Image 1 (cartoon, one colour):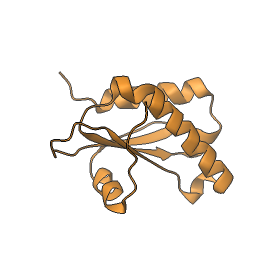
Image 2: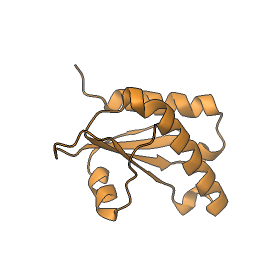
Image 3: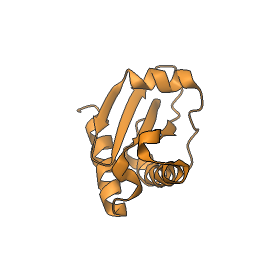
Image 4: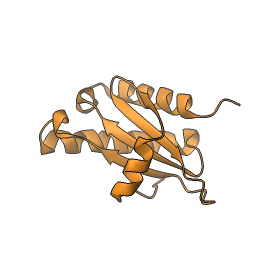
Length: 112
């Protein structure tokens, strides 16, 4: 399943003020849009601290696949999610990245 991708700086800045969960391999920010649209939107970013362009792109590809696998089940309707790569994102075992993303998404869900 594919999700609309955040591309505007204003969307990333709005998510920066929202709730977040930091894990060893990834940081995830989640913002409720409150605009009546139930679509889940997602954005990915990796700073130069992550490495050169090859390493940053590898980290973003891995985060994209993790989001594609987990957001349909754990994502909340009407939310924007921003995945921020950490240094370990590009080289950690795949299952470790999935576990970190899953734990972060569960913690970002409101307690029922």
